[in-house]
Length: 248
Image (cartoon, rainbow, N blue to C red; front, side, top):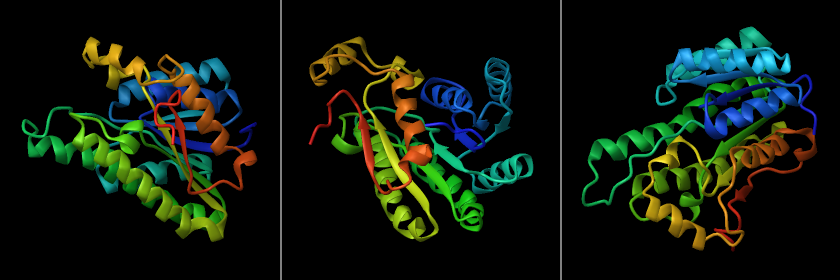
């Protein structure tokens, strides 16, 4: 599953799952743009990955909720790499609380980042991929988008929306050999899960048939497969990496 000669963009690529994806892409031969809200963090991550794997790794400061920012990201990627073979929409955030306590601003922020951000970045890259008549778009959803989760009406709605969006986009782009797929992680130790109450972390283990949380690297392996030539006949699919939690 080599990615040699491929050019990839990973949003939210400075930590957690996004960083694991960017690292694995570079390890497998891809040049990578790491896009994140913090330019300094993106620069540091890009430097570390480039030194480790000898690939061209480019930082970019991105506000996924802003379409112009997403367009600027893709323009920079094209000017740097001449093409974009892979887009991973990974950037996301949470603002968890029960609906009775949730502020409208918390709903809007999560939907604008997780769902509209996926739309913005996908829209920005589609024209280039159509010209190439090839491409891979991989959107990161969540087990919460498949099962729901109390205290996460905003997050669950955004991640469920990513699934529906991806299936519709997969149908739009399939005739040009562009695939669109979803990876839905379960519980994984990241900045988003660090703030969960210890009681919830303990309870989550009872819901996972494999009896443990996953790792960012295990999510990255699935993303790298969907980005590879070996996955060229897979589109519109949701791959749950959750230890069996959302088993259907």
